[in-house]
Length: 114
Image 1 (spheres, rainbow, N blue to C red):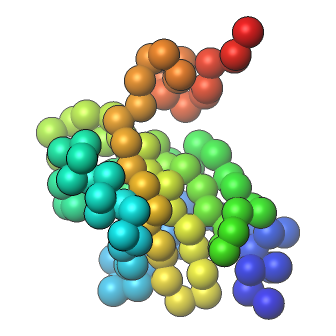
Image 2: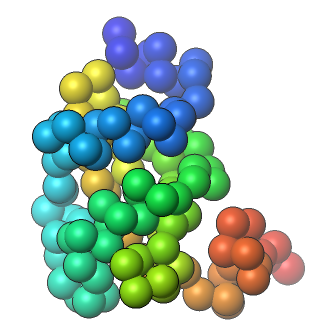
């Protein structure tokens, strides 16, 4: 039932932060692999969530609704974090450094594909 309710509501950044900071954080194997490949620290992902903003919502993602968070790492580098939320957990799915080939300078809006 929670997933259906979340499809009808937008995920809020405070809800994500609360789950991130109260031992409800879960790491997928995918994000662990990507963080290693991209040289991103786990602490930087958490920092980005705690200081970032949601820039895209994916309410129909499977197996649970997710969103894209724009934040900065502790050294100040822009980062995107995709996370899914369930009633009890925040699932970290992937994280990456956005590039200007796909994103506008604000890193909030995607460039149009012509």
